[in-house]
Image (cartoon, rainbow, N blue to C red; front, side, top):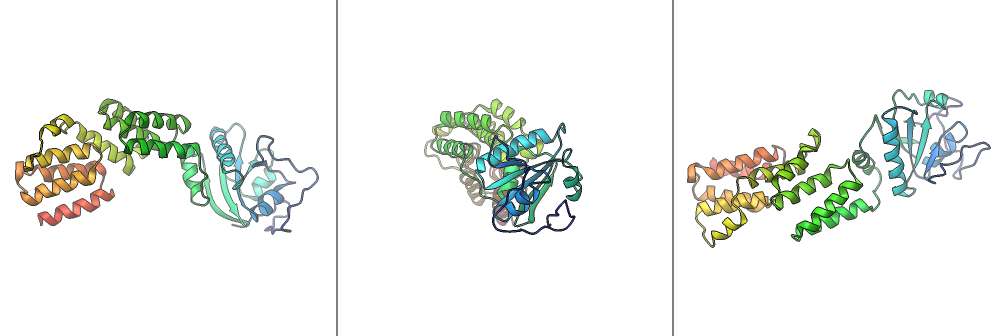
Length: 313
């Protein structure tokens, strides 16, 4: 998409490599050097000429619109985090109706990412902050952030078995990114690991239906389901070195409840390979339960269901 000069109705081209300042041009927002309010005087300088030097996010908005205020707040936060990797150009369509007409803005909020005078991406309507970050991440590399640090620290703590620290970090991450499902899924994972199953269920229930359907959320939900069936760690310890098929099945169930899917699924396959009919086909039934819990498209489902069928047929 070419950018149209609202004063002439013609496609605009960069006048020079050095932007000029016109008399009466609206100044950039005093709150940030990366945020500019657009009008007839600075449109060419900021949007077209600016896009020749870096990305410009042109946001058409309207005061009082219920979707605009939260979106603008999120975009302003992100623009400041990106520290000039893109310019946030705000177009108030009530005040700048001529520009809005030339751009054919039909719905607000309307967001366009422009590079070299061409539109690289666009969406309309409101989006939660984590979706905005995902969308922008398709075009620009995200800067390191406090949220990224919290994510890495929480995952490292959980991997090291320090569940108390991991839980505190995930809760802190939730406070900094309340709309992002990732820290809630991480917190639910910690709660399952510490056998706080009711709390884990409440955290998962707080996710939207869309977020509950993601592979990560379904994996934690599967762990929650099997944690209710699995032997306790003390009961597993009591098995000692026993390697009969029933003991293998019990260890597999505990491994799945602890999120060690590969270990658990491999054990169930080994039971099937030794005796498919053992305990009325318990290993096969558990495998099918895991696949249903994870979802048909989950990578583990695709991998291990194929291997299960190979043993059956």
